[in-house]
Length: 305
Image 1 (cartoon, rainbow, N blue to C red):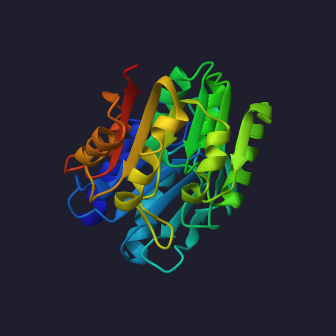
Image 2: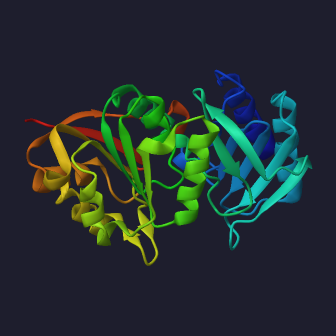
């Protein structure tokens, strides 16, 4: 019964995919809306189906799910399992081809994906709608992208005709992959800046390219020895007045189960009093959470001047 119910969920999820050629999350057990499957996430990274387990499952259970995915996804040539419940989150190929590097399509943009190299694959699928929002509003604008990771927001911004994008991240390796993502999409990177620095120690360098028309801030919630969103978000927002242009916008992102939207609203009220709330950019519908605001939050604010 346990396996049959999981496979039923998968069949339903596959039917809801609008474009089987695009990457997407198939199943979001972590949201808590599927009782008994809170430890399961499934990503569709054509032609790879990736099962992510946050708790151990039996080999027979895993293989039954893998076969169901292969049967339901006509272009699937590899089913892999990432064990987030194990040290270093290893990945195992359980059906089909050995594939570690691939290129996926999201709304016409291409991104490099690496499987097995690190815990994260190189693209956060819950931010699809956020990238689309950026792409639609940045024409002619100067954009600051903090905690840029592999520069997916930057790719979306250049695709939307941004005048300039400044990407900052502590990981130079991630920024190198971001540069490759731009090249993959045929972008001229002469107006894209990559800064592999500690954001909290580099405000003079950030200010060098100001004023910005859009600030994108998407920090990790907790990153040992580096970032604590509850402690550090205010360090960024208190600098907004010296970084932003008149009428500028803030895109404040936070994927946290301990901090809600009120946290972001209060920070803007305290440190950016001239900014008012515009809208929430919700993630794709598959990312629904049983407890409101317990997952990804993306809030847009605008300068009133």
